[in-house]
Amino acid sequence: MKKIKNAVRKFWKSEEGLGTLEIILIIAVVIIIALLFKDWIIELIERLMGKADDQADQIFS
Image (cartoon, helix red, strand yellow):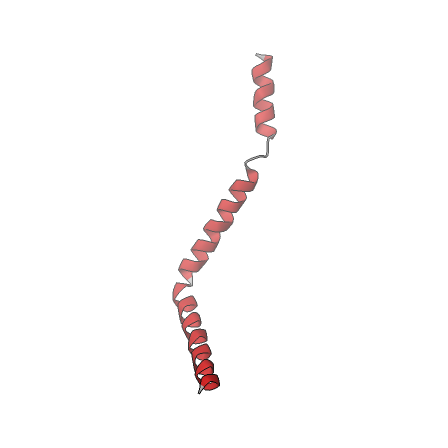
């Protein structure tokens, strides 16, 4: 009985999986933010790519 109690205490104090959980939560938050601002992000990228394309046309013309 004492061995089981010590094993449970050791398992409870173990923090091995904590890093994985934190990474999963951070990824989930980033995905949620990306979904919320999807239209704004796409518009920003299209605008930046358009400016880069215009400047490239000016340089090579």
